[in-house]
Amino acid sequence: MTEQKRSQTTSRHGKNSVHSRSRRQKRRHQRKRRRLFLWCLLLLFIILGSRNFLEITGFSLPFHSTRGELSSYLDDLYSPQAVLADAGTGQVLGSRNENQRVYPASLTKIMTVLVGLEHIEDLNGTASVPADIYQNLYEEGASMAGFQPGEAVTYRDLLYGALLPSGAECCLTLAQKIAGDEETFASMMNEKADELGMSRTHFTNCTGLQNNRHYSTAGDIAKLLVYALKNPDFRQIFTTSTYTASPTASHPDGLTFVSTLSQSLSDPSVTGGEILGGKTGYTEDAGLCLASLASINGREYILVTTGAPGDHETEPYHVLDAVKVYDRIGAA
Image 1 (cartoon, rainbow, N blue to C red):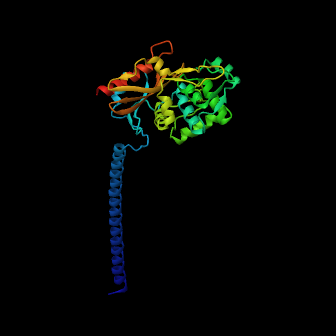
Image 2 (image 1 turned 180 degrees about the vertical axis):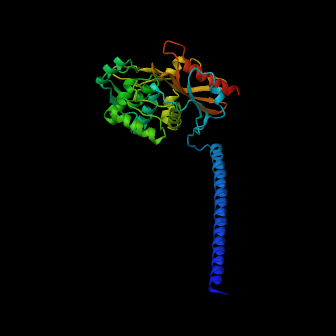
Image 3 (image 1 turned 90 degrees about the vertical axis):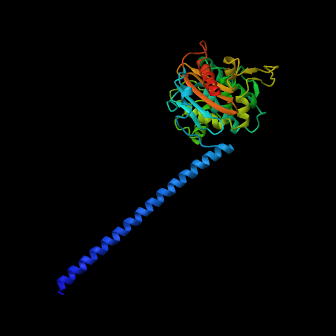
């Protein structure tokens, strides 16, 4: 065989060998991809199985967003934004415009009270209500609990005063005593919001008074309430309808607070259960808002609605929405 023929033969063998190795490598890559795909499927089944197990055993699950099986229960509401969630797991059962930016009004005070509880060491300790906060609150038409300038009040009473009658003077007192000023306290609120994954929320104040840079969503407020209700002190305050504060020099018999929800809801009963508590909110820009908790047929639900028409002089359309949704759940 000539050198040229041997060279051609060797070249063909070399090419065949290269092609063979290429085919073997391709098959190995295909097998690896198939194994990876199968492992991903197995992991998915494990995750789904774990989720069902956690729900059955009552362990907390991350709050997640989905339109949900009960979204039809949110039809025909006065409120354009609504989120219905399982209070225990945080699972969204129904939603309507849950990520739309809204002004949260006094729903803000849920975060104010939560941050307060997480930073106050002694709820029976006292704080003096600053006199210099009142002028601006009067000018803004803010809701007040009724404490007087300079009145020495327990932190516990300030927390109840902030959440039940929506007292702005209680919120500002907490902010100044905990953080030194409202701006710093608002930063603490934003840090907590980031921690909870409230990615569409920004706070500029502790009262919910109107500010274009103070916003949230129904979905984010629902996340907040799911978390806050795990705090026993918060839950106790949130589900209280009437509370009498400790006696002070200004109020020897103590101030009696009635929840703003209870003022609009004479009967908390709904089909199959009852509304356990809630926080209302209103500004002209925010509309009527409500974050509530209900127990129906042995299961607890959270409902957050925002943007309902009306004001303090009209029908409580936000409360009517809550009753409608909870009645639908109980009747199902």
